[in-house]
Length: 517
Ligand SMILES: Cc1cc2nc3c(=O)[nH]c(=O)nc-3n(C[C@H](O)[C@H](O)[C@H](O)COP(=O)(O)OP(=O)(O)OC[C@H]3O[C@@H](n4cnc5c(N)ncnc54)[C@H](O)[C@@H]3O)c2cc1C
Image 1 (tube, rainbow, N blue to C red):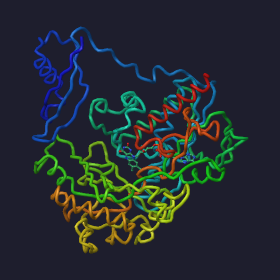
Image 2 (image 1 turned 90 degrees about the vertical axis):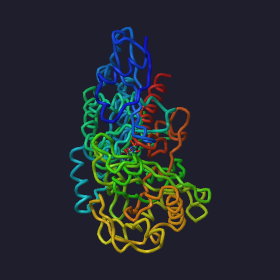
Image 3 (image 1 turned 180 degrees about the vertical axis):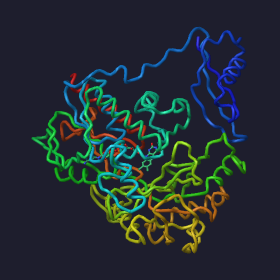
Image 4 (image 1 turned 45 degrees about the vertical axis):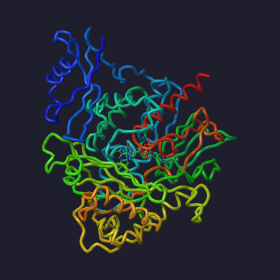
């Protein structure tokens, strides 16, 4: 029989399994001999009073819990099976590939970028020399935008798939098993590359193929069917099923689909800035402790404001993190956030953004499928043009932003290419600047310590989600182009690593289903 119980544990004790077992046995009023096996199923930090972990445990009073069989052990060789071409080696593409293998199909993954290790050199070039390689950057290359990200594994789209299964696959490939129990699991960008390359090995060991430097530039279409894709190196890949998982930054893919008159539509997205605080200040606000000590993690937060019926919200908050340059082409400036597994940088950063609706942009004169993308691109170029150096980012203390003056000095920052003082109201569209300002005024009342001259805005945060969506029917196929399966964040079906993984698996299952029928 399995009995479940929740125990409260101080942060310094969460790794002491014997103690946790004793506490659980005691709370269930069992004898120690009744506990044949013990496991933790959920762990969350409650910081409302004194920070304490709520730990949900299970005790098996009859036998040991069954061990999960790692996915790698149940996959079969698919070398001679029907091929599915997957464009994009991001979370959606790689999880689609794993699911293809599980379904007895042979995935061939094409990515414009480089493998995780080679990609690192290009990230250094953006950070230190402001050189943006349009095929290898924080968004493009093996593992997609998910590799050098924060690696927060949290999604609200529980309906779309089995989150636990995805976490188990990540653990099978080297992630710490803590992610299976933490309420807000996190991996960190120093750990993700090894996990991503281990997934590639699983794909290849089972007969799949992963090809880097394969930039898909053309679609081969006959009647209303996609029959192949052509890469920039001239190589063609012919198949019956194509998964398009190119992420939200593959603007050339949207252009390519448009050239072939393949239906797409403009999609709401969000735009704003990154807000950076000293981490100690966020810890103090959240934990009400001057020093969080060695056992508590860097504190995170979530804020949301309503201004004239429009929402402004924190996005992809990175405690103990870094702000990084996430542009995918020269001549644009985009920032994003990431963190290492220890989350031990002295800074906290978060997107501070507002939703941009297609309707609003239509009213402002942007029209058609590219309404949101054109707007996004225009602002990114404006932020770039105002730069004093290629990837230097404009910044402003939030107090100065509200009071309408350019900051005479700026706080230190985690953003390696550097920041310079600018009037963010001049760079942001008026309505966005106004909404962000009104939100800060609200937060000044609600969270006085958060509203501080030690915090600054750094811009621009504009790649929050895809500005275009690609339709699909009930079989997850494009309604007008047979054989094309739009997938992941770039097609508008995911908003983060987990949901992209889930979507990749769903699409691969749908292809297997259509072949079986
Ligand atoms: C810095 C940063 C931090 C982030 N932090 C988090 C986080 O903590 N948690 C979270 O859930 N999400 C985070 N995200 C978002 C997350 O990474 C994305 O939601 C996710 O990666 C989307 O997955 P995807 O597979 O749909 O697309 P992507 O990851 O964007 O992958 C698309 C792939 O397609 C390839 N590609 C593009 N065009 C072509 C082409 N023409 N031919 C061949 N290949 C092509 C690209 O090289 C890329 O590898 C972060 C993103 C960034 C940039």
